Image (cartoon, rainbow, N blue to C red):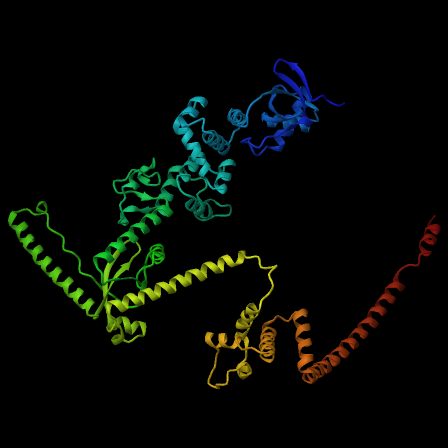
Length: 576
């Protein structure tokens, strides 16, 4: 029986054909339990749909579910043709809010579905945490906690959905960024983890483990931590922790960025304070790679020190009167401090003089969490780097700047090449004609396979040349003739044949190549191995013949032992 599209049942409720209804895309409920739907479908077959669904018109005789999608799906399973529905003339925004709100009234709403629903209402711009708390009768802390669940990585969110972890444990985990969450999941919550599993652990214990294993003490860092005091990623601002120190940071990316920004700014200031110094990092100490990269991007040259350095003298610390019991002790400490200042000043002046005269090199050294001054004897630097100390000592400040400028140009080229390598994969050159310049490029790379005995064929007459330099290759490709091209291509093929797997395709090509260039040698090789094969083949054929005779004899014996087809009924007749 064909149902009408919409038949009035009572005021503002209509009977709508299920064929004219479609689900919406903004329903916060994304999964539906099939067994539960089947039970609801059985109930609907017996009693009908007791509560109307909500729909809205989206075209001529077309409707979209606003709320009640579970009843809509169960009605389809039950085989109904129509369903009672309340029809609403509402916009997309209002329909989405109605769907979200109705779903939040369900008893079986999961924490993640609830979190996503609150997030949608916040994003609509018509609600904030306070209004949601009032509308749904929840506390603001409850709403905020649920909203944090939207930051859980999918793997941990799934554990919460299936009750593998508790809401309390999820509340502790969602305080941290995706990087920490991923490590916690892989090491402690993933299926199959036996040793070190955190499943079943209390929330307070999980919180302590994360704080201990995945956060960093801010006291170790020297940058200004004013912003850290109010940061939600500071463990001092987490409910279970209240430390007297700066706290611990749970946002590794932010910590790395703030530390690198501080180190870059400090490096520039130290270079301004010490004009004869250069930037460097030592192989004997851990350096901050992010800082090194940022300084290079700003145009600074950084040296890699492979020798030990001497520490720059430390500025003496002035005494505090409160630290001394008597005035005499304080005055004595003050006199010592003044002498230390004089010694410090003299040491600094001596280092500056030696630096200007080229005896030593002064460096601003990049550490992991801070910068410091150091210097090395130029003889030590040159010995480690394999250069002549006299040459280094002769460099004037102007020559040093020119050397740095040259290195900066090299860095610019290196960065350009590196980025070009990445972007060249995006080029679509399928419709462009292959040019003569590209043909030369091919031969530039093929020259790497050229055998030394063929150097003369490409114009290298010097017998003392044992390998082709880049300069040699560029000169060769500019003067190629047909014979040289053939030699280069064939040496490439021979090299590839040497390394190719012994597959049928590679073997076929190799033998085809050999038939063309060494037919007599190939025939001699084949003859030797073919003779061995024929002898072995003959032995195998003889053995096969023996086995075939034995098999035939065994089959004949088995047939003689079997009863004839007409003997069985005769025996039965006698018995009868």
